[in-house]
Length: 257
Image (cartoon, rainbow, N blue to C red):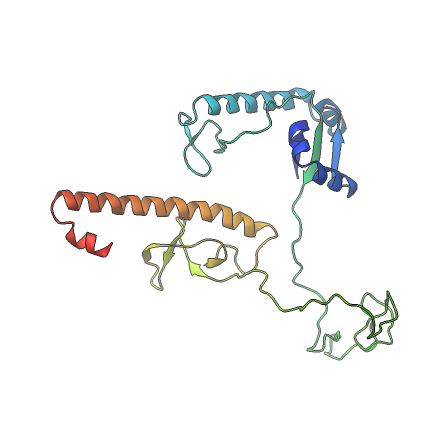
């Protein structure tokens, strides 16, 4: 896994969340990076060197935001080889207090399970209904398998809060076919000029099923890619129009506008 490290300034910005995740046991606070390094047997000098490089990159980005040798994430230039150009809550110091969480892959959704019929009754290997099987195991008097009952009795004279429950589409796996530049393709795999797709409007990115969290990743990555591609397209169209006007052939293009 990876470590999410929040220094004291970052922790303060999301103080409630830090308390919440500490309470759930998935985040831990440390008085310093030395304490963290000792627990995970990581050389403190490695962390100090990483912090030093990070602070220097932030300083370079602040002083010369367009002079970096790398393409920045979201456009522009960066001094960081991964394209990072925004830095907050600096400086990073090993003597500071930190909230740290371990970031690991998770199973977003399990596609396997018990076979059921249209009535949600569980079926055995011979496709026979397993009668009296309670939800969560054991036996139930309720035909749907319910065995836990709370806040009784139910009375029509009581006050109620009621919501309408309707089916929703959690995520759409299908959509327009796009290329690496987020340009939409037709049935012959030819680019449809000026049309771009990303997120749930585009299909084929995740295969037959997506991993948890990848929907946001898809939206952010291909959202930026499509924006960049669209900007390049319309810039080229504007240049062509201006050149046609200068050449005295821009009437047709102007009419299209």
